[in-house]
Image (cartoon, rainbow, N blue to C red):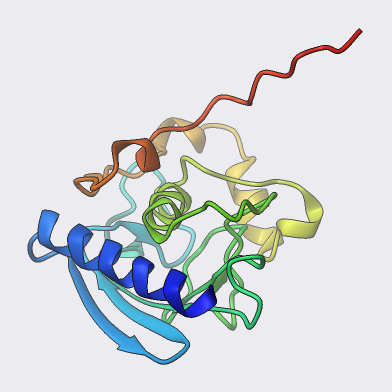
Length: 176
């Protein structure tokens, strides 16, 4: 099941690459994918002037997506070669904390959607167990910072539109 799912994820990434010419470069390894993504703004450090972040913004990222032994029961892990300034990105390893709750159905297209929202600051998990850069969280909580976020970015053209929509919580029927 794991090998078939990884193969399907690769095919999905290739389709996403074709739908977004020049934005994704892909390399396949046995238990990981290397992705170079462009036009994906992220802060490398806290900008001195939040109204004009300028040089603090980095647009091209080299990602490493690794598949754990028990994938898809365990989520993929995403690492940035150049760690960015964000509470949910580890400053040394570049590990990106994308999920509070993993679902087996989550695809790499949805993972890239989550990553894009993390990098442009539209997705932020303030739960202490997910914060890896407390200084970034403190910076974000300063007055007037949020008016300069999110960073302007162009979403990827989706292969499956539902991957790029924030899903409402499922409705639960009350049993009586």
